[in-house]
Length: 200
Image 1: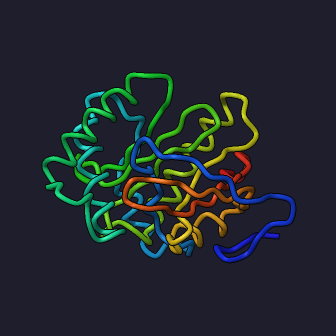
Image 2 (image 1 turned 135 degrees about the horizontal axis):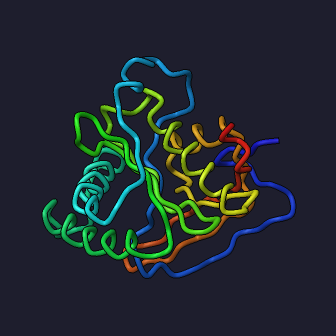
């Protein structure tokens, strides 16, 4: 049985934690059949490298704006990209792995994981609902499976109904709810698990 954003799975409660960094929540399309298979086939998917950090940072910030409507108070687009660039340069140089979707050589989406944790999956709005997110998810799950993990965990904001719909349509299930405390307030996140075999 799958659980939506307002349902509670018996046996787990709400955990509280303090966030030291902004949440790398998912910006992804609601699960649906691929509407334009030709468009997806025309895109190029590959493993990301440190050289992709600047493009990934820009997509991360732009997608966040498109999904949530704003940046942190007082931040400009350039400031946010510069901050994300530092984080992604470090992340791509460490033990995790990432894949990017490119359209004519330009990064339009990406996903990242470390061990059995999916940390991020973002797409530009114009590339959503075209199967791009599903392709990135499958690449990530295949790689995690190849590293010996049967399950992947990731967090989604409880308010992100599009991401929730997408992941649950692919078989992900809620295993925990957490309340994240930040200086700007609190938010609820859902912790999901998905079998790496769901990529097949």
